[in-house]
Length: 320
Image (cartoon, rainbow, N blue to C red; front, side):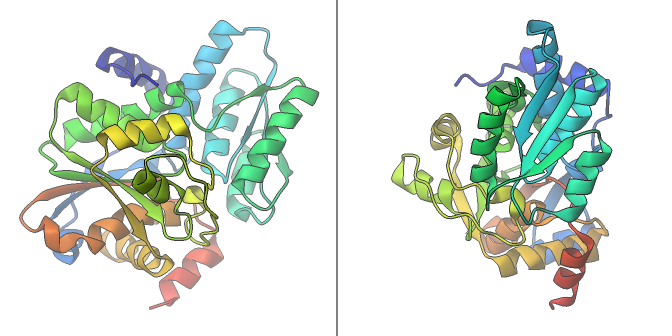
């Protein structure tokens, strides 16, 4: 897969700006003290759907409408944030949307998708099962299948990376959570396009280690994905195209435990009063895990989303 050029990322930014302004990046003093380094946080939790996924969906849906104007509806699979992005982007273009989620998915993310106009279907025990079912439904219901990883989704995620790397210049390292890979590939595209030397470090949950295992083995290896907190990272089948980009550009991948993710979620709340879902907390968890190596440096972390169910978040805050 070819990464987007700077011109393509600027073009994608124009599409995104029609719906949302740039999200902020801040350096929080309490978080700096906790991590023993200067930390810059990219606040993708401040998007209209509370996560970065809207960006890629807007770019993909614009392309779909222009190239396949006869399409009336779309379908996709998600643990929540991608589905919210698809639902909102589809509704803007007067397309129907069907979203498939696994059983036991986040109740509040499900409510959000329905509120954005999506028809919600529950199927399977994890994301991969929901994804495979959505592909079957796409054919039987004559819906366009919106992939969960695609070059145009990377164009979209690269728009936040461009904002971040320009707004917080001189980052020595950037920690990026990995679901299927669009986010970290967008960050790589911008780092390379700007000619920067920032190390890009991927982050996965220990309970969803497929990309970490694949990175070590240098080939796509499936692994069980059952992280309770980081549902957005619970993908068990890596995308070979995404892995290829990571192998060529990522410095290393950090695995973080449920306890480390919970600690990071609490740290975000205590130090910045921002709510981070588990997948978003994973990036900070990895940074805190490696903080001794970061002393005297400037590090970036992506708060990818804040969509966490109330009961789960309260349980995380109490678990001290």
